[in-house]
Every structure is written in structure tokens, then in C-alpha cells.
Length: 513
Image 1: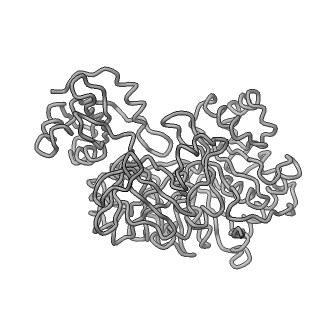
Image 2 (image 1 turned 135 degrees about the vertical axis):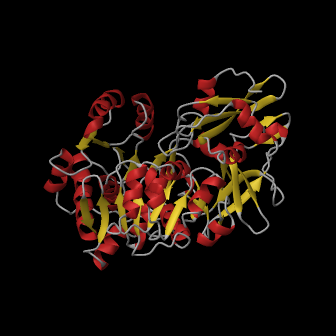
Image 3 (image 1 turned 180 degrees about the vertical axis):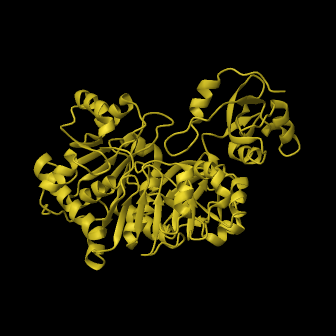
């Protein structure tokens, strides 16, 4: 028998109606649990009565971060509709594919995307659109909430019902819509809540895009589950993040980012004087974090708690607590309570502990599959085990180390090379502000490494100096054969380096030495 899903927002409204749940930092709007629940109920009734949205229908949102997105997701939960957050950095052509695939009945959008939505409505035939500003005011969205009564026909939901569809970045082809259920959200709150020290007193700063699992679920949804508060930034700004963390009136206790966020904050002039002492947890994920960057924060008294997860895993699979962060820098922590994991070779056979293989995961925190993609499900899931596509090893004490993306690994002269290892080394060079290693074709060795480097302000560096630095620190086959200098690295909305774009941009290369 399926487990019933209970409405988190409604629950806390009964217990602590006057407590603050959401703060929109862009518009300075503050919502108590009672106010947020009332708005979500009105919005849910609007969906049903004005737009014919029923259980299982998708509600798309093309908007920058705001508390509007959180109440839209909450409204969907009231009536069993499916929340569909869209990446606003995508082109109209890319969004066209997603909207055709997911077929939302209603598309809510920021006013700044009005032209794009007009075109999308023409090409996709999406039935209804609704404009918001993400800042309150006299918008059609606000008018719809005000005109509606808080009396939707509520749905009785289970942990098996789909709450959200999040489309992956599509680094290896067309994006796929990972279905996230209520059960996945519940188990993520349970799996991550303890190691991240989430309590009703939590005040978490949300900086990652809410169309991404890191923004929506780390630690935003956890704060809602445990009765805490989320402060939402419209978009990431390193100086503003440091100011907010430093401000005692903000009372921020939790912060989550990807390595790029922490890198850019560490390079800001205010980093040295920011008081991090009020942070109970500072989480990092989304990509392997260079150990030198961890050391920079450790020197400021902050232990960055690493973890591992994916859109398809809600996202927590492994996680560190604060002690692990200090004693096992570079690890992704230990397996979450309600999760299983295997590390396998190319044939799906378990590798000995300590050896590198592909990470497979299983449990109630794992997606039931991709929207409209039975062939992708068959390829990605074997007997309930999700193939993560990440290269990983586990040490004797059970700590997981995510070495790199399995597909970012390249083979040079028959040897496996994992770019994250080399990137972590090069980050130690003070002349380097940012770096990515990619594998490129080579007539002799099949593939060799290319270091793509962004210099720190005012610094100079040559290709010979880069390879010379690596010479006595890396095996010869790991030393980059090419070095390229760029002004910046291409990244997606969550800060991950787009290595496929680098490969396309760089083209044919000559050896650096």
C-alpha cells in the first residue's frame, strides 16, 4: 500500500501560523506560514477554475528565483498538479523541445520573458500563460491570486505521485525530464536533514536556480519540511552573498552552493572580513570540489560539507557531516540512511573496495524514470539500480570519493585519466583563478589532456610553467599536453563547466611542450 503524502505547508500553518517561511530578498516580501498557505490555496483554486488544471497536469514556470516559484510548487501539491520549473537560460528552441515533451497546461512566466513565451505559445500551442514579475505588484499573477478563493478541490496524494519534473542539462543529447515524487522529496528531507543540522530554527539562503535540484532541495525544501525559513536570492552574486551571511539581522544558518559559487566568493575582497560563525552548515555539491578550495574555507573556520546527488536522486545519495568535512576533505561523505549504492565495472560487476568504477544507486530516493522516455529508462536503470554516469571509489571506512564524470574520463595510452584530479592540483597555483581539464584527440596516444585556464587578476603564466608545475606531481600520462588560456570558462546555470562547449571551441591543438 502506498504511503500517504501530507501537506508540509498546511501542517506548519496549523502549528506556527505566524512564523516566517519565505523571504524574497529581491522584492523584500516576507511571508508567514499562514500567508503562504493562503496564497498557495488561492493559486491552486485559480489553476483549477480559471485554467482547467487537474491532477497530473503540468504547470510550467519560466522565471528567475523568487518566492513565487515556491508557492507555485506548493499550489501544485494542493491539487496533485505537476510542477515544471524551466531553465530560463535556455534558448527558445531548447525550451520548445521541453514544452512539447512535457505539454504543460499552464505556463507562468516572468514579464522579462514575455517575448519568448509569446513565441513558445505560437510554436508549442501551450493552452494558457500567466505573467508575473517575481516581485509582487499589480501583475496578472497577483490579480489572479487576489481574485481567487482559498477553496480548491484538494487531492489525496501518495509518495508515489509525481510532484516535480526537472529536465537535465542535456550534456549528452536532448534533455530528459526526471520525475521527482513526493516520496523522493520526503526521503531527501530525512536523508539530509540530520547531517545538515536542519531544525525549525534553520534560516537557509537559497542562491542556486530553483529550476535545479540544488536550488529547490538543498536546503530549501528541507527548511519547509522541518518548519524553518528560506531566504531566496533572485540570482547569485558573490559579494551580496557574503554581505547577507555577515549580517546578524539576517540570521542565516545554512548555505548551499556548487564549487564555482564558493570559488567566486573566496576571490571577492569581502571574503577575508566576512563572519561565517553563525553558519551551522555550509554544503557544497554538483561537482568535485578541489581540495585547495576546501582549505581556503577551512582557514576561515568553515568546513564545507560535501555531498553527492543528482536530479534523479532527489538529490542526496552521500553526504558529510561537519566532522567528516574536516577529517576527510575531498570525500563526498558516507551513504545516506535511506539509500543503496554499488560501484561497478563496465560489465555491471562490483569492483573491489578502493578501485574506481561507475556509481549505481537504488532506494526510495531514486526517480521512477524519465518523462515520456521508456528507452532512456531502460538504458539508465537496471533492476532498480540507476546508473549515475559518475566515476567513484569507496575507501576502507566507507567514504565515497566521486572522482569525475564517467564520461569526462579520457584514456591516454591505455591509462584512465580523471580530470578532477589534475584540476585540483592546478588550483594550487596562485596564478590560476579557474581551470578545466578536457581530453582531446591525439594521433599517438588516442587522447591527451588539455588544461583550459583562466588567470587570476594581474597574474601571468605560460604553458611551460603549467606543465613544469605538474611534472614532478603527476604521472607523465596525466600531464596536460596542451594549455589554453581563456577569459572565462563556459558554465551552465548551476556553475558546472560545459566541457563539451570547450571541446567545440578549442578545436585542433598543438602540444604545449
